[in-house]
Length: 338
Image 1 (spheres, helix red, strand yellow):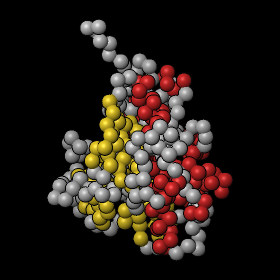
Image 2 (cartoon, rainbow, N blue to C red; image 1 turned 60 degrees about the vertical axis):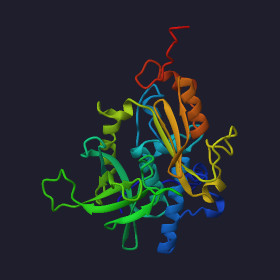
Image 3 (tube, helix red, strand yellow; image 1 turned 90 degrees about the vertical axis):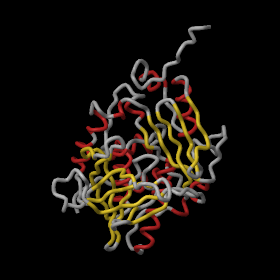
Image 4 (tube, rainbow, N blue to C red; image 1 turned 45 degrees about the vertical axis):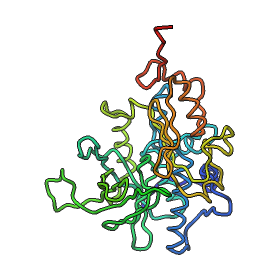
């Protein structure tokens, strides 16, 4: 096997702490485990990661350097190690998760994905990535860095594999193996991840992905698209998303038990029921397919407070100042009639 970075046992312990995995459920090597046990552990790791590590682009707005580094050790320091404990967008979250999978002994590789535009229905270039894990003779796609419509469980690579999305919601997800409309050669099939909001509704393609291995060098090249492209919305709007479980309380000021940092029991005993979605100047909590909480920010200070309260991320003074005067800042509008 090609040389790839691995995390040490101590680093895996820190990762387990970060995602709120109880000590009784921690496995440091899947070697010798049955295929069923390996798959069950993937479900567990993915759920805890989706709830504890937010999909976010804060570095592109709340930092002086605006640099996205996808090397595994940097990602560990940023996402796992205190006091940072941030999240990341697809290249970051999935790259970190990939190194965890390899460190646990999974046969896994990363693959490139093209996101489908909601406006045009067309796919862009490779600007997303996923993990593919091989268990026995079966392949499973795992994605911990796509946001609220992303898969909440491993997706089996078989045509028209269906999965539920969140508890008590009618939304479903699936993968299909088909050509995309932009292909000149329609005999070439590719995996497509789709989302359906309810029975009878249209299956909406979210992204397509290949099942051939991408190198770490490919991931670093692909990272330039969301980070540097002038058409990338990541550089224009602040976004944070994390999934929640049905045991989390909607109103809580104590972060040890509230929405900012779900406890081990809240995650392990809870089912994923929705997602917290912060986009620019608003925050929504979608649970059971309905909006249960909605907040509109009138200032950047209000947004920073919500980032702390609902995502458990503390921004220091230097980071808070870095957004001043940029397109991503929420500026208070004075009342001219006072």
